[in-house]
Image (tube, rainbow, N blue to C red; front, side):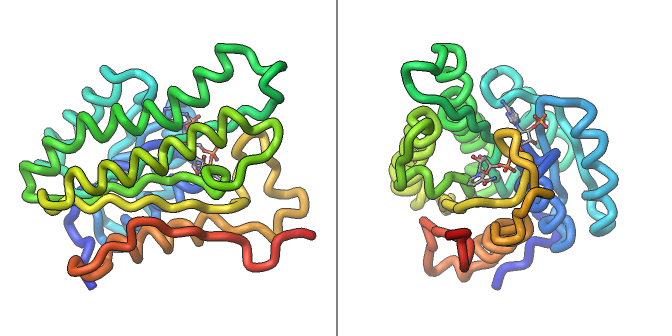
Amino acid sequence: MGSLRGKVAFVTGGSRGIGLAIARALVLEGAQVAITGKSDAHLSAARPLIEAEGPASVETLKADVRRYEDVERALAAVVARFGGLDIVINNAGVGIFANVVDMSPEQWSEVIDTNLTGVFHVCHAAIPHLRRRGGGTIINISSLAGKNSFTTAAAYCASKAGLNAFSEALMQEVRYDNIRVSYVMPGSVATEFAGGDEAKGADWKTAPEDVAEVVRDLLQQNPRSLASRVELRPSKPRK
Ligand SMILES: NC(=O)c1ccc[n+]([C@@H]2O[C@H](COP(=O)([O-])OP(=O)(O)OC[C@H]3O[C@@H](n4cnc5c(N)ncnc54)[C@H](OP(=O)(O)O)[C@@H]3O)[C@@H](O)[C@H]2O)c1
């Protein structure tokens, strides 16, 4: 099992929900962690929660994954502060749910640009930094919606199905550079995603910490083998 102590991790959408749980888990393991988000208030609120997990350094960066210049600037700031980059967690994502006929082109773009193009932006800018370290790990947070389509979710399901294909192609592109690419497909997770309210009978759902545990285990896997795709579902979903 590889130690994460001193490794440098970049977690998009690390200010809330699953990304926040991942950032906390990585600091607990001794990694230095930078998180991104759109809202300054959410980033400020997240910082003490992450710092409370351990003495490792934490950086918060306002950066919208839809904007390539934001992503490039954020990654450059991380490398300048920590001296390099080892781990990239592409977690930032949005869900807008409506039938295709009712969905505006702007809503479609928001979902695809965040969940799919945003991951391209981060990987495109991060891979040269990982190569300079001699390798690293990229973990993309997808969704079971990427393989199980349902009504009102055409944009979301398409974004995550695209992310799955992107992740598999990228995995094959960079594996001989010692860059490991995996994607995790959670089912329902108790967060505020898409306006969800975790207080309302969400006890059957997976917790953000459960996704973080999978991410931590992937990062600590023996490098001889690669768990490139993980499906994580609630054990007993609501019937
Ligand atoms: N919750 C579920 O049931 C579930 C299930 C399967 C997969 N997932 C996936 O898991 C990931 C995290 O979901 P979550 O439930 O933790 O969501 P969440 O609680 O809504 O948190 C989303 C995070 O992403 C950030 N974000 C959104 N758009 C962004 C952008 N354009 N640029 C940078 N950051 C952005 C948010 O920052 P701000 O606070 O600044 O907006 C926030 O930190 C998503 O990719 C989602 O598709 C979720």
